[in-house]
Length: 468
Image (tube, rainbow, N blue to C red):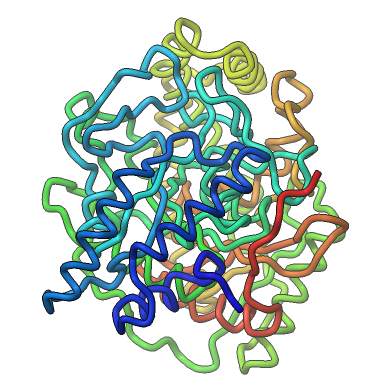
């Protein structure tokens, strides 16, 4: 008999809505699973056991009284440690912030609560959410449940790992340089990066301080799930508006139908990266799945693909050096400091004129991509060009160079403000290989439609037990 923790959010919400399961039963089932598997991977670092059970009782009472129910009514979820959640610390994996308790929900948290979701815990991230590894001096290291010798991804590695093992069906994450899609790939699950402005994304506790231009243009909030339909459901919930966020777009979730058949550009080997053969094979296999469903598939390189990742590096690296680096040096953990120092050494300090030139060049690149995507509305590329890197590779300059080489394809979506959906395709040893599906801004629906075609061929992700 299938246990409730094994279900996706869509099925679980339907059971609760129709009275075939209670929210208390769902929360109890997920918490039992959490206590069984979380000690082996350290994905959820704060557990709200009593609060979640109380919220579940309230949810069941509301249903019994005939109240209107949200689309996630009574469904357990998790929230990453770097966004505001009322009455808890937005510690971002930093010891100095362990008591930074906030009194207002970020919009994405408020939206999930408004939909009826029940928050059972907080998932881990690296210090200041700035590494491809999920490890910090406050909460420790998160392990990849498929293979503990490699990273679970970052910065939303706790979220990705928790979904893989069945700790709740939806985990919140965020993405400025791959931090939703990389954990999706590393843990063999689904990770959706919405496009710029789709989901309101500011943090009330830090909004007044502002962010750099690059971060404003690139950082988004998105879900990790085990099914593509859950990613669609979570996006619809997360995207509820907040007029305080100037980036939020009040646009339909379903865009106008594109010309048929839909053309797809495949990029099996991303320029400038040493693409692993298994990753290139995954891209071509995804293309075959789509072709069988009526899509027209071409191996076609989009404009500026070789140049784009360097612009991301120049923009975000310069902002990080000027803004975060002094704080990281003061209160970050040793590995976080070493990793960021190695990254900035690799960057060789982009000065202000080069930073401004990179922002200007990015603008022209956006126009060229939008023209390209009029003909090819979908692109499929590797998420990382290589297999997930071994633990703690990023504390040396050479390690950072290898990681950046692998990250090149994942950086295009944030650079251009576009949506990207990571889905597993194929296997390589203990790990899943996988691809990312990109589309034009506000066309997450096209990514999700294609993702469902690929998922139908590959199979829906099932929870795993942590590997030893």
